Image 1 (cartoon, rainbow, N blue to C red):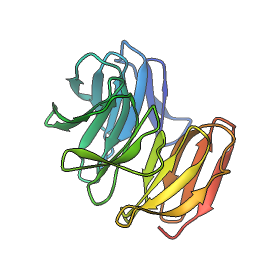
Image 2 (image 1 turned 180 degrees about the vertical axis):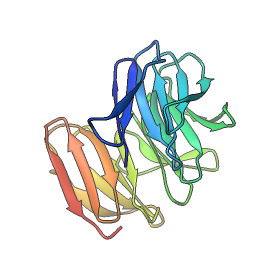
Image 3 (image 1 turned 90 degrees about the vertical axis):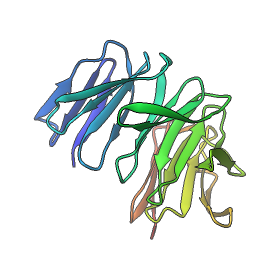
Image 4 (image 1 turned 90 degrees about the horizontal axis):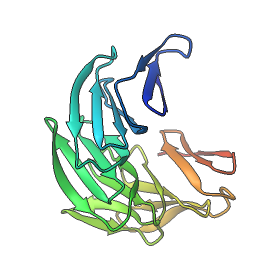
Length: 212
Protein backbone atom coordinates (compact mmCIF):
# COMPACT_ATOMS: atom_id res chain seq x y z
CA UNK A 1 0.00 0.00 0.00
CA UNK A 2 1.12 3.53 -0.67
CA UNK A 3 1.20 6.30 1.88
CA UNK A 4 -0.45 9.59 0.98
CA UNK A 5 -0.30 12.89 2.81
CA UNK A 6 -0.68 16.57 2.10
CA UNK A 7 0.81 19.87 3.18
CA UNK A 8 -0.63 23.23 2.11
CA UNK A 9 0.09 23.06 -1.65
CA UNK A 10 1.91 19.72 -2.01
CA UNK A 11 0.61 16.16 -2.23
CA UNK A 12 3.05 13.43 -1.22
CA UNK A 13 2.85 9.73 -1.88
CA UNK A 14 5.24 6.82 -1.46
CA UNK A 15 5.61 3.06 -1.21
CA UNK A 16 7.59 3.73 1.96
CA UNK A 17 8.11 6.85 4.08
CA UNK A 18 11.76 7.26 3.03
CA UNK A 19 11.26 7.23 -0.76
CA UNK A 20 8.44 9.58 -1.57
CA UNK A 21 7.46 11.83 -4.40
CA UNK A 22 6.15 15.35 -4.09
CA UNK A 23 3.37 16.53 -6.41
CA UNK A 24 3.64 20.30 -6.34
CA UNK A 25 1.46 21.66 -9.15
CA UNK A 26 -1.25 23.10 -6.89
CA UNK A 27 -1.18 26.86 -6.37
CA UNK A 28 -3.87 26.82 -3.66
CA UNK A 29 -4.07 24.89 -0.40
CA UNK A 30 -4.81 21.19 -0.90
CA UNK A 31 -7.99 20.20 0.93
CA UNK A 32 -8.72 16.58 -0.11
CA UNK A 33 -7.04 13.43 -1.44
CA UNK A 34 -8.40 10.14 -2.77
CA UNK A 35 -6.91 6.99 -4.26
CA UNK A 36 -8.42 5.11 -7.21
CA UNK A 37 -8.34 1.28 -7.32
CA UNK A 38 -5.71 1.38 -10.08
CA UNK A 39 -3.36 3.43 -7.89
CA UNK A 40 -4.10 6.83 -9.42
CA UNK A 41 -4.29 9.76 -7.01
CA UNK A 42 -6.71 12.69 -7.02
CA UNK A 43 -5.88 15.89 -5.15
CA UNK A 44 -8.18 18.89 -4.76
CA UNK A 45 -7.68 22.41 -3.50
CA UNK A 46 -9.35 25.57 -2.28
CA UNK A 47 -9.65 27.02 -5.79
CA UNK A 48 -11.98 24.19 -6.87
CA UNK A 49 -9.37 22.39 -9.01
CA UNK A 50 -8.84 18.62 -8.99
CA UNK A 51 -5.55 17.15 -10.23
CA UNK A 52 -5.46 13.55 -11.46
CA UNK A 53 -2.07 11.80 -11.11
CA UNK A 54 -0.97 8.33 -12.20
CA UNK A 55 0.85 5.89 -9.93
CA UNK A 56 4.23 7.28 -11.07
CA UNK A 57 3.32 10.85 -10.18
CA UNK A 58 2.60 12.04 -13.73
CA UNK A 59 -0.16 14.64 -14.04
CA UNK A 60 -2.89 13.18 -16.28
CA UNK A 61 -5.57 15.87 -16.20
CA UNK A 62 -6.78 18.99 -14.45
CA UNK A 63 -10.48 19.27 -13.65
CA UNK A 64 -12.23 22.50 -12.70
CA UNK A 65 -15.47 22.85 -10.73
CA UNK A 66 -17.11 26.20 -10.01
CA UNK A 67 -14.14 27.88 -8.29
CA UNK A 68 -15.53 26.87 -4.89
CA UNK A 69 -13.19 25.11 -2.42
CA UNK A 70 -13.43 21.33 -2.57
CA UNK A 71 -13.76 19.71 0.85
CA UNK A 72 -14.07 15.98 0.08
CA UNK A 73 -13.15 13.40 -2.58
CA UNK A 74 -14.04 9.73 -2.97
CA UNK A 75 -13.39 7.11 -5.67
CA UNK A 76 -15.56 4.00 -6.06
CA UNK A 77 -14.42 0.46 -6.74
CA UNK A 78 -15.00 0.95 -10.46
CA UNK A 79 -13.11 4.25 -10.53
CA UNK A 80 -16.04 6.68 -10.24
CA UNK A 81 -14.87 9.99 -8.78
CA UNK A 82 -17.11 12.15 -6.58
CA UNK A 83 -16.29 15.50 -5.02
CA UNK A 84 -17.96 17.70 -2.44
CA UNK A 85 -17.61 21.44 -2.03
CA UNK A 86 -17.92 24.07 0.64
CA UNK A 87 -21.13 25.33 -1.02
CA UNK A 88 -22.82 21.95 -0.44
CA UNK A 89 -22.57 20.71 -4.03
CA UNK A 90 -21.75 17.06 -4.72
CA UNK A 91 -20.33 16.31 -8.17
CA UNK A 92 -19.90 13.05 -10.06
CA UNK A 93 -17.09 13.06 -12.63
CA UNK A 94 -17.13 11.22 -15.96
CA UNK A 95 -14.22 11.60 -18.38
CA UNK A 96 -13.18 14.75 -16.54
CA UNK A 97 -16.61 16.38 -16.80
CA UNK A 98 -18.75 17.08 -13.70
CA UNK A 99 -22.43 16.31 -13.21
CA UNK A 100 -24.24 17.66 -10.15
CA UNK A 101 -25.61 14.82 -8.03
CA UNK A 102 -27.29 17.10 -5.49
CA UNK A 103 -26.79 20.34 -3.60
CA UNK A 104 -27.23 20.62 0.15
CA UNK A 105 -27.48 23.66 2.36
CA UNK A 106 -24.19 23.14 4.18
CA UNK A 107 -20.55 22.33 3.31
CA UNK A 108 -19.74 18.74 2.44
CA UNK A 109 -17.39 17.32 5.08
CA UNK A 110 -16.97 13.71 3.90
CA UNK A 111 -17.82 11.30 1.07
CA UNK A 112 -17.55 7.51 0.82
CA UNK A 113 -18.52 5.00 -1.88
CA UNK A 114 -19.86 1.59 -0.88
CA UNK A 115 -19.00 -1.65 -2.65
CA UNK A 116 -22.62 -1.56 -3.91
CA UNK A 117 -22.03 1.79 -5.63
CA UNK A 118 -23.87 4.00 -3.12
CA UNK A 119 -22.36 7.36 -2.20
CA UNK A 120 -22.49 8.35 1.47
CA UNK A 121 -22.36 12.04 2.37
CA UNK A 122 -21.74 13.97 5.57
CA UNK A 123 -22.07 17.72 5.96
CA UNK A 124 -20.57 20.33 8.24
CA UNK A 125 -23.83 20.76 10.14
CA UNK A 126 -24.06 17.07 10.98
CA UNK A 127 -26.36 15.62 8.30
CA UNK A 128 -25.38 12.13 7.12
CA UNK A 129 -26.87 9.64 4.68
CA UNK A 130 -26.49 8.31 1.17
CA UNK A 131 -27.63 9.25 -2.31
CA UNK A 132 -30.54 7.35 -3.83
CA UNK A 133 -32.50 8.49 -6.89
CA UNK A 134 -30.81 11.91 -6.80
CA UNK A 135 -31.94 12.51 -3.20
CA UNK A 136 -30.22 12.17 0.16
CA UNK A 137 -31.58 9.41 2.41
CA UNK A 138 -30.85 10.84 5.85
CA UNK A 139 -29.97 8.70 8.84
CA UNK A 140 -31.72 9.36 12.17
CA UNK A 141 -28.44 10.55 13.69
CA UNK A 142 -26.13 12.70 11.65
CA UNK A 143 -22.40 13.26 11.63
CA UNK A 144 -19.46 14.81 9.86
CA UNK A 145 -17.57 11.60 8.93
CA UNK A 146 -18.84 8.48 7.15
CA UNK A 147 -17.50 5.02 6.26
CA UNK A 148 -19.13 1.94 4.70
CA UNK A 149 -18.46 -1.59 5.86
CA UNK A 150 -16.89 -3.89 3.22
CA UNK A 151 -20.26 -5.49 2.48
CA UNK A 152 -21.86 -2.14 1.73
CA UNK A 153 -24.88 -2.76 3.94
CA UNK A 154 -23.80 -0.79 7.02
CA UNK A 155 -22.81 2.86 7.24
CA UNK A 156 -20.78 4.23 10.14
CA UNK A 157 -21.12 7.88 11.15
CA UNK A 158 -18.89 9.94 13.42
CA UNK A 159 -20.17 13.22 14.81
CA UNK A 160 -19.03 16.48 16.39
CA UNK A 161 -19.84 15.17 19.88
CA UNK A 162 -17.38 12.30 19.48
CA UNK A 163 -19.98 9.57 18.98
CA UNK A 164 -19.68 6.72 16.46
CA UNK A 165 -22.84 4.98 15.26
CA UNK A 166 -23.23 2.33 12.57
CA UNK A 167 -26.51 1.73 10.75
CA UNK A 168 -27.99 -1.15 8.79
CA UNK A 169 -29.07 0.78 5.71
CA UNK A 170 -31.83 -1.69 4.82
CA UNK A 171 -33.66 -1.63 8.13
CA UNK A 172 -32.29 1.74 9.37
CA UNK A 173 -31.44 0.21 12.73
CA UNK A 174 -28.21 0.81 14.66
CA UNK A 175 -25.66 -2.00 14.74
CA UNK A 176 -23.05 -0.06 16.73
CA UNK A 177 -23.74 2.74 19.20
CA UNK A 178 -20.52 4.00 20.76
CA UNK A 179 -21.63 7.18 22.50
CA UNK A 180 -18.37 7.50 24.42
CA UNK A 181 -15.97 6.92 21.55
CA UNK A 182 -14.34 10.35 21.78
CA UNK A 183 -14.58 13.40 24.00
CA UNK A 184 -14.19 15.72 20.99
CA UNK A 185 -15.31 15.61 17.33
CA UNK A 186 -14.58 12.55 15.22
CA UNK A 187 -12.11 13.46 12.47
CA UNK A 188 -11.75 10.16 10.58
CA UNK A 189 -13.44 6.77 10.11
CA UNK A 190 -12.17 3.63 8.35
CA UNK A 191 -13.93 0.25 8.10
CA UNK A 192 -12.04 -2.86 6.97
CA UNK A 193 -12.87 -6.56 7.03
CA UNK A 194 -11.61 -6.78 10.60
CA UNK A 195 -11.86 -3.33 12.14
CA UNK A 196 -13.90 -0.16 12.44
CA UNK A 197 -11.42 2.56 13.39
CA UNK A 198 -12.19 6.13 14.48
CA UNK A 199 -9.94 9.06 15.30
CA UNK A 200 -10.88 12.26 17.10
CA UNK A 201 -9.67 15.71 18.03
CA UNK A 202 -9.14 14.30 21.54
CA UNK A 203 -6.03 12.53 20.23
CA UNK A 204 -7.56 9.06 20.59
CA UNK A 205 -7.74 6.30 18.00
CA UNK A 206 -10.40 3.70 18.78
CA UNK A 207 -10.15 0.27 17.12
CA UNK A 208 -13.24 -1.94 17.15
CA UNK A 209 -13.03 -5.56 16.01
CA UNK A 210 -15.72 -6.23 13.39
CA UNK A 211 -16.77 -9.02 11.05
CA UNK A 212 -17.83 -6.60 8.24
